[in-house]
Image (tube, rainbow, N blue to C red; front, side):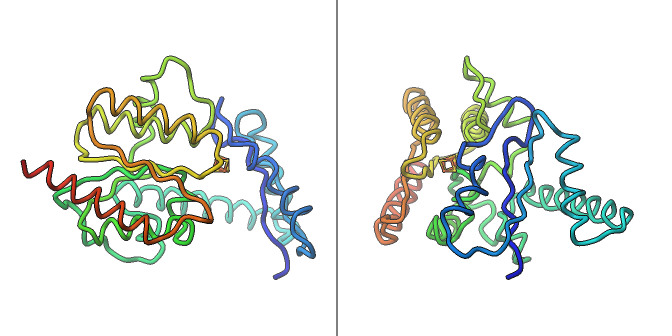
Length: 249
Ligand code: SF4
């Protein structure tokens, strides 16, 4: 490996920020892992320095390719690829479906389950223990934040009195409340990382509001490196069985 791309992602939208661990990622990697290849460290800060971020990305690209026209074209292609990818997700595909080119055979199942958590946890097969695929195997239609439109998430997040200024927290909360209002899900699974400060607050609020309104059953899954797969499978199966039973009565 010649180098590792480890950007410092401060913000990806106006007035919202990522958690401090993203801000410190290059340093955590640089000082925490011995003998790393060179890190390509660029700051992504849409909130304060959008133009500077664009310039920095071009400067980084210039260390591989000197011709500005090729760099511009590469940036445009990257933007287009991202737009196409996001459009595919909105059609109800998971990142795994899109990247592997497979079709979801479990669309329009009898139970619709919202699975909300940070994308880098949910879509990492190792960390989430392949949660999304397991739910589909149990016969559930899975809905994630990535399948919703930005306006739907914003509208859901507007329920809270105070604005959530963490991008991932806002996404989770906005999706949960939009789906709650829409009333088209049978249950919701909240996936939180053990030790995550924002999750401990956001997931707790979502759980309380769902329980108070008796809108849909909530399963709270807190995962870390000690979480056993067998325990997760048992809880998922029991949850889906319970949702099916509720639908049948
Ligand atoms: S899981 Fe929580 S603590 Fe970890 S990077 Fe994401 S927001 Fe930060």
